[in-house]
Image 1 (cartoon, rainbow, N blue to C red):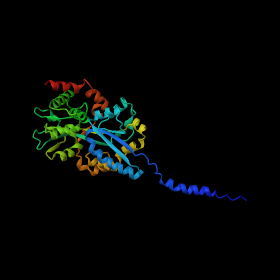
Image 2: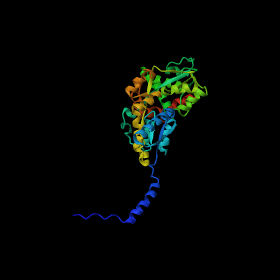
Image 3: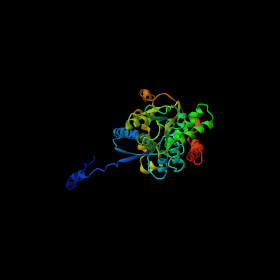
Image 4: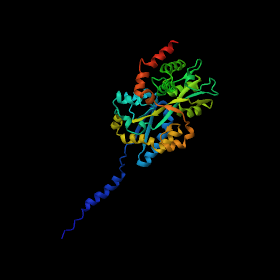
Length: 344
């Protein structure tokens, strides 16, 4: 027979009882609240402001955790270089792949194959380059060729610092090539267009201010996703012209590996980007006039996205790295046409 265990001494029970109120009064150690920084291009701020609210609510509901989401916006190339130079972005969301490539090439912050991590070349949304004109379209601007006519003033952000500017340059050049025109004629058109640019702003938002607020220029080239916002902010006296052919702007995203591993935010950062492909994330994108990847959401918002002939940088220029090297890098065609324009 096993002997019964002896009860604890009375003094031990008394000490434990006295300690309970003290333990109950101690604060429980709260989990540190995590913060993500999304470094993005100039004209995406309103979309990500709304998207962040939706994702934060989703994260709270599914994990019980409160997540603080911060944004930084500017000319896309400047933003990317800021990350390379030390801005601690958990994620980077751009409108072209070469502005993310420099994180791999120069900063070694992400792997070279970053674009294979998620579907659709890791671009959850797209847009197209369009032309905004004054009410009634007094200069009768209908296509890219009209932007090169004498007496037409065009507002375009600087292709050296702005993804919007690079897309505009390539849109006009590529659309001309797609119409079976000789490369020399395409180059001549782009030269005439940039000769008509009175000021080169650093990013898309600055260019919009120059055109819509300072009332400079007959036309502004911007992304389709920006048109509704510009019209709301600056009044209904601006009209959109969709060229016969235009470039498809793909908006890639990436987790910045070295930052999230240092901060311990990889799980949150990866979920933040993956949610862009969710039906909720795609809905937010469509409401901001970004073309969604989801077939269901695209069908729901079909009236907001007119069909147009588009081409990609990959198809016409051999990819962003080649387009950058062939056209935008120092001493290339863009620098040459700017030098020529300054001499005129």
